[in-house]
Length: 326
Image (cartoon, rainbow, N blue to C red; front, side, top):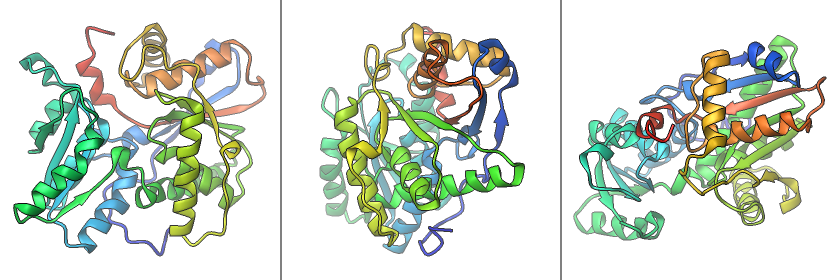
């Protein structure tokens, strides 16, 4: 495996299931749909960040850190998984979060799990949490602690390695089952998942389309982030691969009202997938991305003879914080 020489701890339940969506495929009368279930990685309801945390936590332990520090929105899936990973290895956990209302009713979904997992939460109000991350870490150092800082989404070259390993896992599953996918579709935001998949695909010779449906960032800006992440991770993995913005496919047509704002696109996708194949999507990431996929299928952007894989990146616990919106 490309990542075998890297430090790694075992947290995730791997390999995650690879399943067909027969009823939804029949309803849409389009391409054959499959789903990769990274909502089933374990770690306090699972999600894609668990793969990244296998490498990030290993790095933190190697540096003798005693505290994991990361950032995100109030309903951050990444923050919740980081808190759970810290608990698993006996580390303290500090979450720098923004966009919170102080009413008791708001403490649900991922935020409720953060509290349950014993996370110390630092609120930044309307200011971007990532801008406070280093300052919080410095305060911890001043208090005599040894923090390990994990960026937004776990998206740096250490975390991205988790999705280089992930596509190798997928291709092994495909080989075992004599499968191949013309397209891989997923939600993209901080860029770590997409950069890892694209890098792993290039290294392993996968020739299908890797389509990230943006949750919030504009495609042009996100592509530059993806270039930086892919180049840095290639260097980390000692792979002689170069990347440019045009090497990444990002669709930003479905950002709607912005990050975490639920619209009819997300409502339709969440209901459609739940009622067709009994699978739960989340309102921020997978609901938006699958909503985009449904629209593309309905507009015949895929050939009916193709196989399309939706990579489910998790976030199910966030559903419970959006009940009224849904």
